[in-house]
Length: 145
Image: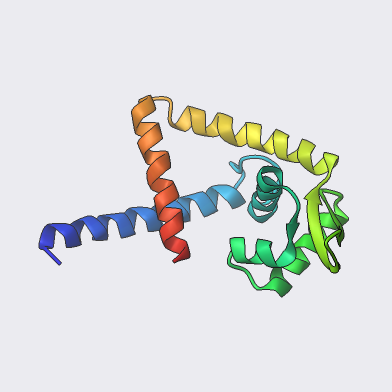
């Protein structure tokens, strides 16, 4: 690998590691955005965007063991944010969907998060935001492979 390419990859590795650390810190600090835990927020966002989903599909989406996601889903269901029901095409399989309470909690947190990002990115041009978003999508896809 050419030296300049190596340096570019090293910078990405360092900056991404730093970004993740700072994001995790914000998520557990008094500066936390919203009221929902990150795992809950992501699950609710997924169900809102893609509709009812099987446990196995959700586990694959979030790279979690089915048992881990099942425990998380049970806790979220106990709060009334999601509902488990039988798949009409295969009664042996459960699906999860967002409840109205879950949608309300999601809307509130999503609004707070987006306002925070608007503030953090207010000095960025539209083009910078667009490109950064596209690069984040590519990075997230690369992390799956």
